[in-house]
Length: 346
Image (cartoon, rainbow, N blue to C red; front, side):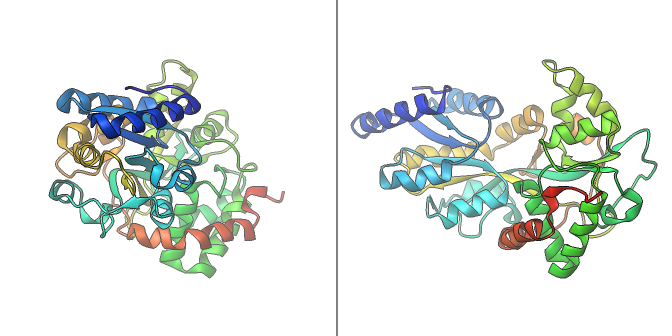
């Protein structure tokens, strides 16, 4: 049973599948994924080819954790695939995960990128960096703190401060500098915005291309996505107008987050689900993550893609991910307190 269709259609198929799997002991894994199907299909196809175990995917970009809560012990979910430590910790806090003990996972994934109790495991890392105009920004180094400097007034594009990527970044600022300074910083960045926050990361880079702003914040892999986008070739021009600057490489390091996986609490195919988790951390799968998704492999034995390597090496912020998760609520409150998403005042 392979499912790559609409949420509604897949949901029905998954429900039916669980009923038949109980008696038939089907060799399959049911994956609830916040990650888009085209990103994970090459990985799941490789897993099936290697093991013979089929995968069924339910994709939704908003409410899978809530769905798992509602489904309770009857949930057909075996695995949850998602991005951002916030969502992973939210899944744990919602009670929809269970511990996965595996020597393979512990060997392949550094301790910094997995939960100490085995409730979630990072699969890739992603750096939140600066896309700077090649024509209008002369600096080769810029810190996150500098983004609040008045010299950038009217020159910065960012998506909503409440997006999970920015909430995590702001949480890291709180962790390093304290809540008071983080608020001061956020007010400074708000004053430097070129426009009211809107759109995704790619829309911010488009702002650099059109001259609406000189600096945008985005995750690294968007550079690759745009450069390789044959369906919308105009995005190649957006990407070529900017260069990547890794903030704070001479200091505490660039903020990094993860994409990850968690074993569902009521996984009906637990053994096969753990096999898939182990495969996703393997050299073969991590190479696919590197080449297809252009994310940084979490497995230290696997190198990033040649394109990603061309952007240069950088120092990673060693701040523990659970500390970022802990401060996400405060970060979100700060975004509202300063009215960040209202944009610049003038």
